[in-house]
Image (cartoon, rainbow over all chains, first blue to last red; front, side, top):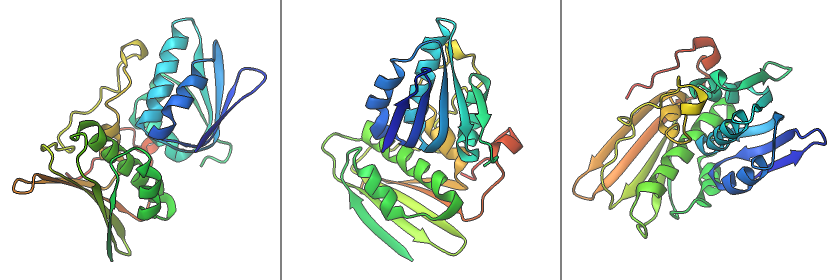
Length: 100
Length: 146
């Protein structure tokens, strides 16, 4: 189960598991954001390639209008997945405060 | 100890598969990632209406081996699928193609076997119970021994 909360500043907060069964509702939430958007990943426990596809598609759309996703509080495991995917080259990624 | 169970060929089976695998500790994420990517590949490329997919779990104190068995299918060797082009600039990147690329880097071994007589694909991966070096430390990534 994945929960996506929208903050008053347009940021998003991901909580739970971003797997293939969550793509449709997640893509709908990401399709609504605009500009430069902070995505708080502190509560993100798991992401698969289906979730990576949603992030990539959104980043391409936002970049077309000068915006971007900024991924914050990323755990070590998920950061590894981003690095292996080359996402560290095309996203701004900040680790979590504990260096997990 | 070896356990095995059949799962319906639908995306909703994933949660049951994760629960059945029940990998504990810091290698949980890698194991679940590999199960999801290999299983969703079977859903994508398998024959619609084909039978269930079997999952076999073989645990030892040092490692967990997971085998996904798909019957009555064409051969498809995930160890030979091309890597994704992860160095491309953003506008040239396309969603898709990352699943097997990542599986090969996250698990400690990945093997594929096809049994002609039963048209059976057997894809097996192993995760050891200790955490390998992080990607952010190695940059080049780990290489599974195919």
